[in-house]
Image (cartoon, rainbow, N blue to C red; front, side, top):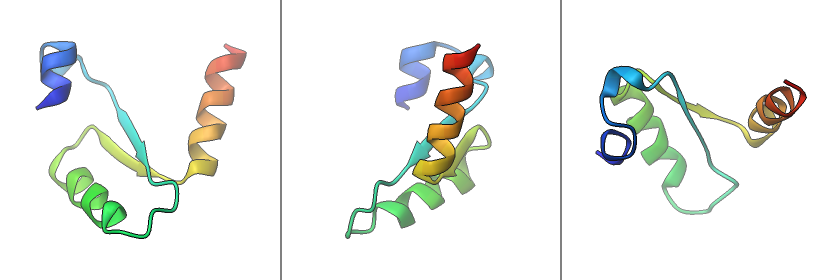
Length: 59
């Protein structure tokens, strides 16, 4: 899995937030399955992602 390669141990991963920007294929369905299969993955709307980015920028 890409996250294990990038970050080493799975335990060090706190949360991965994924969003679909309105694609017309089955991306959202795939993301939802990935979220279901991985406890540290959250599928979010773009609006929510932007809110999170804004919070991080303010910190």
